[in-house]
Image (cartoon, rainbow, N blue to C red; front, side, top):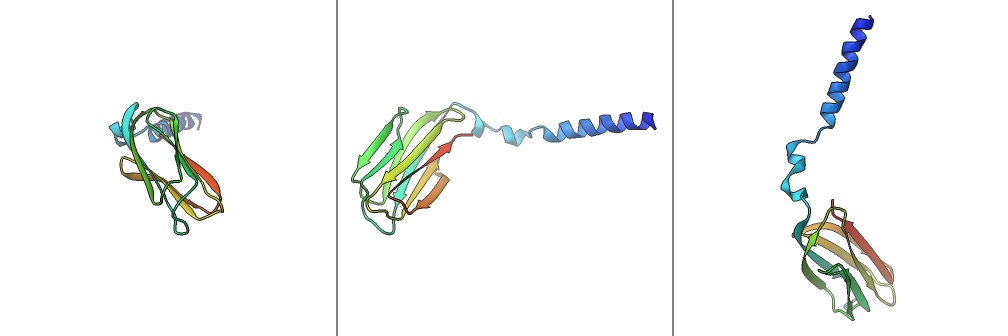
Length: 127
């Protein structure tokens, strides 16, 4: 019985390790960092035409604030990012209104959320 258990244990461990290995499609060039991406920030609302301010991460790694922007607001930047870099988008309005924030990377929506507050922000982490 002992002789049967050892080969079965080795086979199970081999199977477990092999099933955890990444496939070639998981390691494609889209996950290679650093990489240059197009980032689009979109802000819209069904209840207001303007906000007090919108703040977003810019090309240099700092933040830019747009004061009294008209809605819908769209800003596109090109930036080189590394894995685990974080970008943020936020707003302020008074009184509280329904506001939708969206972050697109290379024309794909990666984060989208609606808020009903006077100020909110969201972030996206590059994976």
